[in-house]
Image (cartoon, rainbow over all chains, first blue to last red; front, side, top):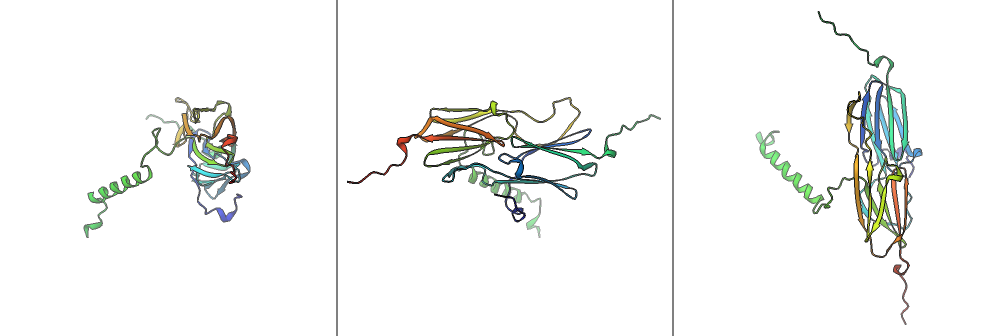
Length: 119
Length: 145
């Protein structure tokens, strides 16, 4: 169950996400149940951020599945970043199967208040 | 030339018909507790010694998960807090797809499972419940005399 390049084209689940933006950047939360840290990959490819994960469940060898709602052991999803975001200023944390990805706004993109003058 | 008109009423009627056929094909008798996409998703398996239940329940505090076995039914319940900002905070929500709130799912257990031999572990957002079968119900070879 390692994630080699040849598996990139394999079927994958789309993890549900929440995306919130505040003045300093964007926070993305994504559900990756069953994926340990070693099997989660966050990479930036041009202006696209790609999230990929492979589950590692402890399954008894002689188990037969009787009811299956999750039939694919991997997740994949990609988002394009707009230019006001700084791919260098990205941090990722995985806890209890939830990825929290924080993407800072590029320095010059921090909001500047533009004064509106009345004539 | 008009046969494939994009906005022809008949095409929509046809799409509607196909859609309802699809829905019926996938959910002939949906669960009384709701449609298939639920939180947590469940996989269930069995071995000669046990039943194995996997609940895909990311983002929980393990101490807050309620796991009960009662009258041959395993029930898993709890509440998942929302990660979204509270109203009034200066933030914009662009996407909101993740489940939040109370959840409750049940699995009917086979009769030979022992309600006193249940082990539950929560790791990487997956709750794994393993329930042992009672000894006498394991397949036994009967000698033919």
